[in-house]
Image 1 (cartoon, helix red, strand yellow):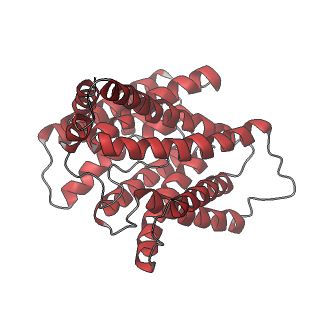
Image 2 (cartoon, rainbow, N blue to C red):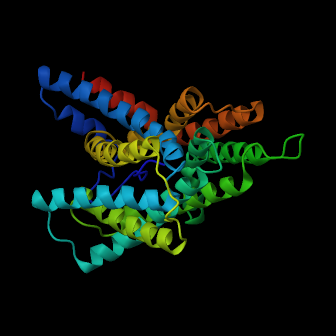
Length: 336
């Protein structure tokens, strides 16, 4: 799971999708506008490809690094660097109330959400992991329905299609075994649900004025909890031997998955709508599956491919109903 999957990260983030176009149109003419167009394209490629590749990096990382320990090192390192940078750039010292809010969000998104991904990556191929994580938009619609909101009919249909795909994925095959490990699938589903609830809470929660500082605080909290869980579960033993590939994967997750991906994500939220930025939810799985097949030798049975197609189809319906893809194209086009 990408380190930040929430469409709105603070009360200061743009709530009106039309701000996407307005922000781009406010850029100057000529070379400035052309530069913005290419920066937008590069930004979307980063959250599409880099975040899509993090699933393979996690898969390689947990080969020899304990899953909770890996998450702890990743988020504590990235969080500490980002926190120090924000304070150096003049961000206000967070209050106790803001720390409490970040603790709730960091627990739900990073401790439970990302912790679930790291642990389940030991049992579920990276490609299928990304597909199950992509169900977050489906849970988001269900949570909004539970809150009394009436989503569009196409969104309801998309949710039903997506959940049917999940059922197909965990359904036993003719050999009486599921296409994907059911325990791993359950943990990923739990993590995705926690991520969804945390994302909804983050929309209205009073966080630090600086979105970057708020994310850094969440990473510090989530990383600290993962470290405690890692120590309590006895992950670190004298027999532990970390391979070069796992170490390189962890470094990649810190630098590219968290720091680079985060900064790009936050910039995109300023110049493109949350709906447009959220289109990565159904692009990341395609990237993850492709990389898993090419570099990890993952082979998906026909039933898994069918289930993946159904799930992503449902997610795409939900996202398209929100105008995400259209607004992404509009933002890039008007910056030409």
